[in-house]
Length: 228
Image (cartoon, rainbow, N blue to C red; front, side):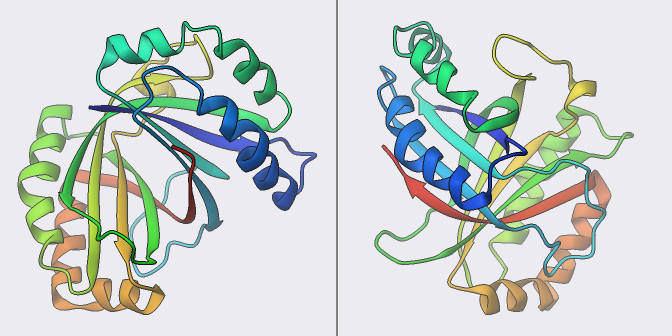
């Protein structure tokens, strides 16, 4: 399974409510028609504070994260070569001011429980300049994921390891043009649970380890709208 994510900034002339409504009600159904799509979620950013952590934040700002899951790269390529893409791309001009695209390998570390309302935080990670991609992956997958499991009140955790980048459609980008290495999905019951987790001894150990391989963490609280 792979996931294609859009890091979306709304058009400057659109209000937040107008952007969210158009994305949910008009753009979402268009994307939902892509063949081979295994799932499609919209994550609407509701809070950009660097809440509960003391770590340098990157310059990336977004109004939403889209997530589209496919079985593999050929399935994704077929979907974006289909007849449905024309209408989808045309509608992007109605709501998107800037679009960055990444493709990642999702790794579910702590599955989220079904049917339980949860608070979701998404974070972008940029590795330290002295850390290679291979070392970043090893530290994130092998060590950091184990430390996350020790956090109190964590209800779900997924790592998305980025392997491809684009600055909009059909504009492949080098790492230097979009220097983020991973996207975190982290769930709690509520904000108090988030604060308690990172304020705990386990939380302090976790963030100490993050400093060993991560240069920047940019956090966003999101409201998720499930389309497919």
